[in-house]
Image (cartoon, rainbow, N blue to C red; front, side, top):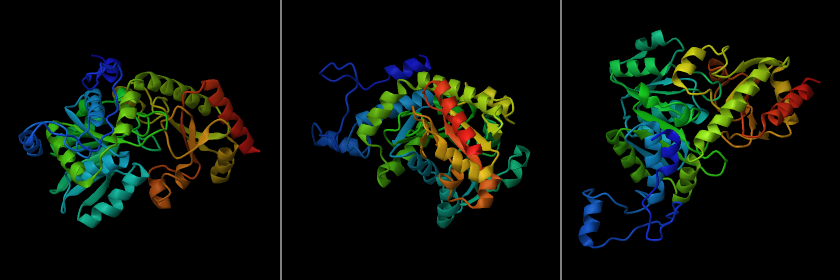
Length: 388
């Protein structure tokens, strides 16, 4: 079946009530037919529900759907996107291991890598932009490579085909945060990715309602992540899972419009005299445009740009938008503008932000589903007002 059909038709088995739309299973625990079934389930000799921290029908539907959409064997859902990233690290890394990571990652991922992994004896090195220099950083204890593409918020694009080959050659776990692309635009497993994480809070929900995360991969690898989540309580609630599974039914049509609007906004901003630079993977001005076109179906729903007047004009711009929301979230039906240097990446040092292109004048736009003329008019008016 095609992507859209999988997203709509993958559901839990119907109950005796013959419902057309999957119900929610808001229960903390489950009952057993007899003592032997109870024993067998706890011994993992049978598959079935025991306790909703372990498994739940609503959560399992979401997991199975995400695995199918990513083209992998299995998935495990988590309470948040950062719980998914954290679980993808801690299920496989131990004291003495070494991690290679792209420096252009979400602020909280950066914090985990720089402040928490070293506490547990896990060292790391940042990957340079020049992929030819990656091999120099591989050590005998290097276990995993982690990256985002496109990255948050600078929309760096990394060659997944090269990365997959590099990880295979060096026997590394290839771990990718695929949040910005979603499985509709990009399927990293096709390029050799072992672990694929998402903040389902973003495009997968698509309406700014619930938190959630997921890690997808092979059955063997996801079994290890499940063990960690089961014991540490990173589980997703049945209600949030039900919302997210329903949201996946419209992911394709939503992303089509997000991408269409984002490209039109990026093209408008390239011609705006108040804008210094525009970053969007499907603009031919993007340095990795060719690679982006090879590994992504469309360019995504995020546009980043720098205002000529720097920090002060950027602040005036944010204070001048009327239609777009000021929020640290993204992936919503409503367009959102964010100043990463003072919000999502504020905990990074000034030098760390500069190293990944997060300048004080950088603005991130999560382009929504409003009419594109209204989005452009709002941003255009705010840019004109901020220049006065």
